[in-house]
Figure: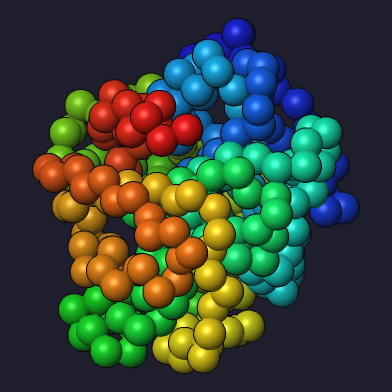
Length: 289
């Protein structure tokens, strides 16, 4: 395992729960929200880069890593998740932040920007569709519906956790290694870090409960009649070789924004975009922020 001695690891109280965070740097606040099945470590290439200009905070989101892991599915509804981000920003003494999210962290970032526009300076989302676009495609795009099969598999109690845990987390490691176009993007040390975080008691269930709560609390096939328009400047970074999310999920975004978002496509790159193409992602972040 690697020792990240130059980064501060702290626990903060946000929205009434304990969130473990890695922080570095000084300046305006940047919050980095990871996806499934990860933890703060998925931002290891971005933390020191952004810390040259900003105060960077990368939490283990609720249910992950060293953060609090509620046992009940209801605790993972989107309302709780976006209030975690609100509480996190306030815990660091800020009123606003640049919010950056990938995968589920991106889904939370979209919803946070809609619910709390006054607290978002700039928004960056990586390989996570706007909820309105996703709902529309689940209903009318058979290819995307088939790509999203795992969302329905995750509704089975206990079985997804058992399958991911089997063979010393063989499937979890395979998801990173086999999906990546650049097979060198994940070293054995990287995979060991990801497995160690997933091995924490309750971590697999916590991450999967995001999907269970989504299905229980909302109808993913029913798009609300209106989403609040996102007011903050927005950058969408999209790796084109994403096995779970099609490129068509980036089309037709303009109606959901006051100012049309900037979109940067990255060809020959998998879902794990900020880990597989960190130099390019960091360049886009630097230009945008």
